[in-house]
Length: 216
Image (tube, rainbow, N blue to C red; front, side, top):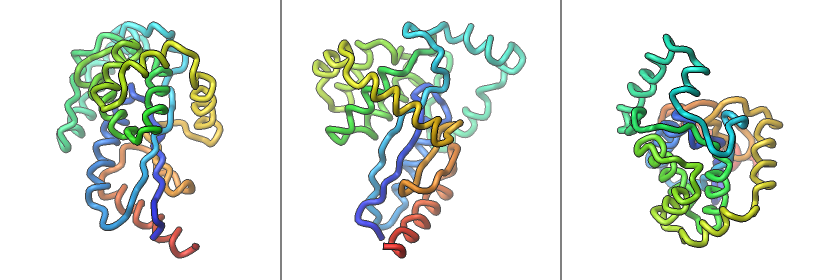
């Protein structure tokens, strides 16, 4: 087996299936025996056209899905989330935010090895607490709650630090064929699309890790 297996997760904070996928990944990782996995979070924007100030969530969802589909659109997520205790609270969400700054924050959290924790904190902030994750004060607070220097993050958010780099990485995801998230890229070679079950994720990680070990 490789010394450290690299698993890239392409996702967006405002993707509910990505939150579910993160919790399923946690369950999969907990079941692995003796494999050191490095999880790296990669940015994707479900809708790059959302303005920096965000949009009213109800109006946005209504325009996107229509009134009839909107009535039941969350039902599969609620049912799937109950399996692992994913606390979706759709009624709490007032805004659909632009997530560029959230992705910058996740990018920076890698330098202090808190990326996985930062992703979890942002998913909870949006999907359970209804916080606006395009608000830089909210993002700085979330950083502090995830064990990262909140004041430093607030200052970075007010700069242009990594705006171009994060935007380029979002474009790169599209360039390599990512059209839906979450997408799990295993060992920098194999892609698994969708919020797969913990068993499927664990089996795929083990199989790819074994292939890499046999080739080395």
